[in-house]
Length: 312
Length: 309
Image (cartoon, rainbow over all chains, first blue to last red; front, top):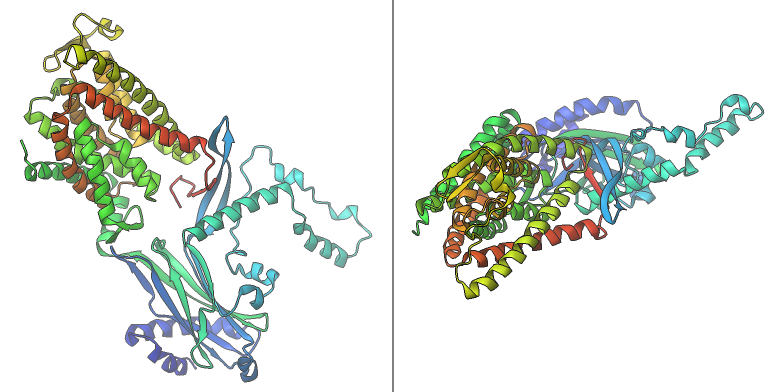
């Protein structure tokens, strides 16, 4: 199957030799877990490149992701009941979000919230608006879309440990008459009751996403995943100029009539190239030497400028 | 033409950066300040992460002040002895400054402290200088010299022990205030990414009573070393010196500084001081306004170490 897919995908790539090699590796890895999931459809993606080099003239890029959907129900395909979402998730890093408050007339950083694992960038392309593709609960579970992206917040470092007091969890013995099903329903309903702490954290989450969206680090577009043939699709992702370096994950999700079928993913490496990489490496590994070189460069520039512009 | 800056991790226009360097270089040559107090806010305004702006500002200041100091040295307006004593204090100060910088950044209060320091120092010094230079200008209309020094007048500073003679500055003064002034300059250099010229120039004029002509060259001489120490320390501890960015600023700065030095020779001492005072006040007011005005975005995102994430 893999070879057949490869032959079909081959012409889509600009430079076949290495692209085909990357794709072969991807197919070998991802055809295994696919078999364990629901549905007969098989689903794979391949990237037009597995490494993005940030050169001195990098001003953002477009990443094209190709994919194949096989054993799909022809009727559902005609009715356009299949939906595909492709995301590129940047390296996850811990971040601190701070909020300024007016204190004695000055705007000072007061509150802060730490998030353990926040994607440094997030680009999404989808066949249709996400709300039409999957329900809210499903999107949250899959951490799909900017609004439902999970950030894994750590407890606030406050000394009183307030969150636990604010939300007293009732032990099971207090409610012996309630059936298991009722208790489950109650547990499901609980997160919807907004506690002051949860509302506060929500504010920080919202701010983080808003700032990253304004910077273009988080973006999502609709209609950017298109079928180029009944079984082949392509997704166009927009990558910003300050694309973070590190290992990114490209992940594609397949939905059939609002039901999540399966996913397929592949890494994408973003690194500084040539001179930029050399500078970064020097600064990281030989800090003092780098600093001394920077000083010498400055002195030389100053002296040289004096030489050229000798006006006295 | 855009260029990707490897440490700042952002792609910016080369000509804007060189132009920025040139404008600041001109001012630096004119007043004998390194221009760090201008370049750092300018870089932040141009979307460069504040920590990178501070460290890279210090690096760029070296080139401008070296070029300027060389010009002053040829004209014999550098007091090497006074500069060296200032420097000894300055080196201790800059180590403390860089350590404080790292701590404040982790606490998330670096921006606040830097802004407050700028507002207090720029506002205070700018205000005092403006008042004094205007008075001096009014006086000089009848007398004509425009110099601060008046025979027989001494401040409390001149009563301290451990006196030393500085020939070029025509000065006989205790080394204690000189060392302390040097340390203060170094400390501010570390936290604010400035050479400290805007503190050193007025302090030398008003506290030590050094002639304005010698002040500029001596200040530039001293700044070279303070900024060099800051650059190396920032590179070693915070890895925030972007040498590509610094080089672009330097090219502009060196060109600007030549014209600035030229222009400085055509102005009188009191006029020079009044202009510097106005500039210092303007930057101070601008930063003060940002502290008081409601921010467009009250939230900020950083890495746990305080770096912009």
